[in-house]
Length: 138
Image (cartoon, rainbow, N blue to C red; front, side, top):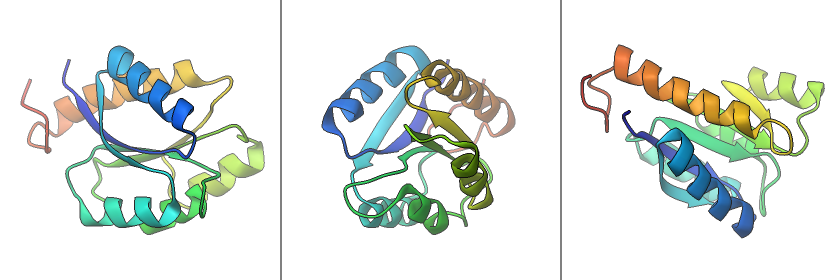
C-alpha cells in the first residue's frame, strides 16, 4: 500500500502523538508536519502543495478548525480535509461540510471510520492520480 502524506492540526500533544503513531501503523499515513493553531495550519497548507490529507481538530489553542477549512478551500482535487473533533454534532458536521470539509469524524466514537477513510483515500489516490506527489503508479 502507498503512503498518504498528511498534515495534522491538533493542539493536544498526547492526542497528536497517539494519532501520528496509530495512523502510521494502521492506515500507512505519514504525518509530514503538524501545528496547534489556525494561523500556523492555514499558512502551511496554503504554502505547500505536497500533501494529500489534512486532519483538523475543531477547537485549537488559537483559532478554530473552521478557519483552517476556509483557508484551504482552493486546494487540488486530490487534497482532502477532514475534521476530527469531540463535538461532532449534526450542526457541526453540516457547517464543516459547508465550509469545505470532505468528512467529519468524532474522536471518541469514529476513529475506526477515520482509519477506513484514510485507507480508502490512499487507494483512490493511487488509482486515480498515480502522478500525485508522494505516490508511485500502482
